[in-house]
Image 1 (cartoon, rainbow, N blue to C red):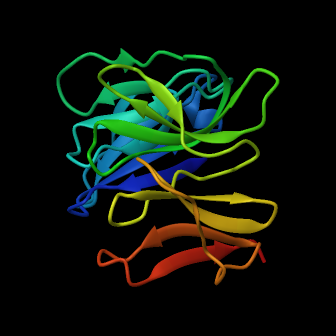
Image 2: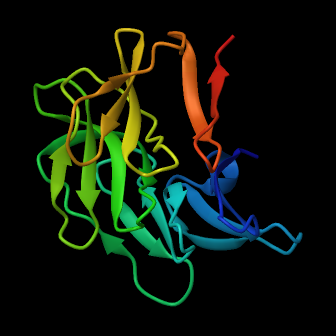
Length: 192
């Protein structure tokens, strides 16, 4: 009664769903469902954020608090909880195209929100934006930038090194959601 589609596998054969209302219980439920109409498979508690590029892991978090990133296997295996580091708050997250790192909006105690990258293997967390920058974790198709916004302006923040690139063609209310595979188009949604 409250399913939220979070990700579609690269081959279009699986959909990651999070159940949030009464059907989920107090802890939420994460499901993976094939697009052929077969039954959904419950992977665990929480809220699913993204499906890894290889389809082997789901990035998830607790429904309340969002203090940890938890990797749930889509097949056999055990969940893996990533270290929290200095962060006290987390927002929307996604895998980077390499499948070894995640990008998300986070906040340290008494600091403004920033864009962070976390390495899955080492657990290391690093900021890639200044404070007071928000993101929905959207990564450009070339895997080099994360789109973020501050004070109604949008920028591409480099994942590795370099200056932020302004996206002057976007309006303040535009929310980037996907780019075409060749990077020629940027799809956005608008609240209105």
